[in-house]
Image (cartoon, rainbow, N blue to C red):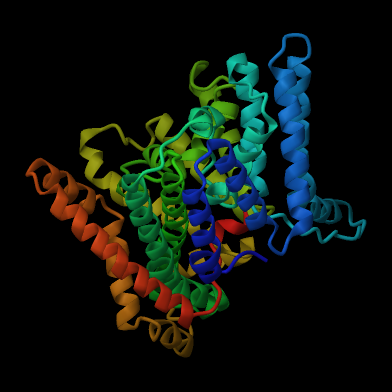
Length: 468
């Protein structure tokens, strides 16, 4: 159980913000944010918060060990065993037992272990801290409380973005709290909230309906509609959360790096992964791909390294063969682009590249969304077969395309491009920046009202990445 959106908007955040504004001492402000973060995480999950606190304490100690010269490698090894071990126990134990049962027929009982929310994120942050200290001893933090705040800070705790300690170390010790930052942060937060509530949730209504039926009942158009709506849902759901996290961080004086950069305008899968979930792809690049040799040892080794990264990327998302296949699917196209079998670097291919990239991404997300491999392949089969499917089922799906859903769909397509960023740039260049900012603030307030009305009238719809 987590905070409901309305509880967060009208109780938790206002109280935290007011106390933060009233307190002038920097250390006291850090204590407040850490305490608020623990309350935020512990709400309904007191056992999970103890797991996180133990993880933080041990990573802090491993960081101290990695800052020396005698036991630094052992400290890193222990940090890897701790963090990967936590993920293995809580996230993959049941999956591994099922595989063993399938291979051996032993019939071992499959443990039902509740997954702590955000464990994939806070373990990666803790591990990156220890490795960064090992690489550069100056990164060590001898104040346990600072490490606690870094890992547990509530805006990005349960669904990212994954933040490296070196990126915010100076901000933990000193940061700005101003009206300008508050204004920018609130606008960014509200914009992210609207992405989630007004766009992602609407796309999710259609996607969930499509994937609730047996693939054999789906017509071609209905299957494509479900695939497209889910692609837009997961983007605006996760991008919206990242915007909210970045906005909240800005309010309290932290600058988090961007996590998305219009991935759907990419002309290749390699470019897509430079724009999609940037913090995760950067983490795997820094801590897996480069240590394996990166692209420094020839195309074959580069290909194997990328396959390893994308296998782990898929597995990171969940204990299921659907996620693993999704990761390997992207690894396949990365390989084809590396060998120029898909000629993404040719000028003549560039106009085609955008369509090709979108097609690969959408087909991949079908498997990502499917509960099982058979369901995923079934939906893919429906997308490329001339079968009409069940008329009643198709009618029920297309009846969901209400005016509200179609408007949300239109805005989803529009916001998938940098059109508003270009408008802002032109406004700044023509000395109309204040007018643009005023309209943006007014629009944010309107989006806030619409989002609250939507939240009040709808059932609880958590962020997709909460389960990762």
